[in-house]
Length: 300
Image 1: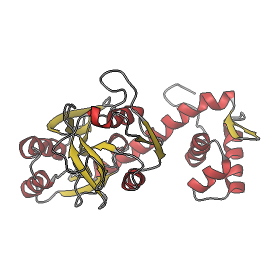
Image 2: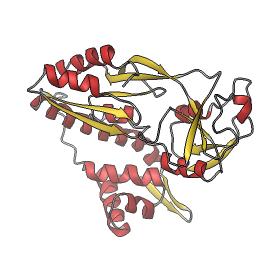
Image 3: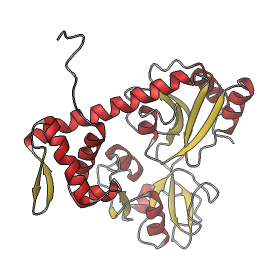
């Protein structure tokens, strides 16, 4: 058969996804829970995939599950297959809906003026907005769940077009009864020994940035508790077990009611940006970029 028409491949993407989840959790039980299935059913699906591929991909051990040598090779290929499938579906759907755009944004950022301007000038377009998790901007764009994002750096920007909209100060988040609460401002010296939480499975770049780790003098940031999500971090701070560095949220935009913020002096501000997929020439994306650059200046 010619290279133009390669031989058909019998590979079920649902089974490929099961494999990547088991590889991530390194445990069939936890993977089954994440996939909302049973462990015996998941085991059968993995066996079917191994039959399709023709090799053993996973080895069970007393401590859990690990990739075989062949599984180590297959994992990045499997992840690429799933990304390509998601992108193919998203691009196809977008082609059928050229007058639709979904705009993502991070908590605490106001995009109303630019969204309203886009709707006013494109009355026939479907304009949707979506609040994203603090660490989901890049993934949401590349998986075509959104077409543009107003969010905060840092995050990896390859395959994206990123425009800085404005600077935003970083603040210290503390309980209302903390010794630093109510001060006009604080410095890193004031929190030199205060524990700062780690967020589990966070991008190392983000984790280091919001923990200011290392500090300007090269010292590591004090270690704090390990948490699963931002909301868990707020509970820990409210309980007096840690402090945190973050964006200037208030109680209307997601700050825990028992917490307050203090301006952090001597620290570079974060940057609020507009990000889109590199090479996206959608007229609505282009129009939203123009409105965002003109209207989103950091002032609601």
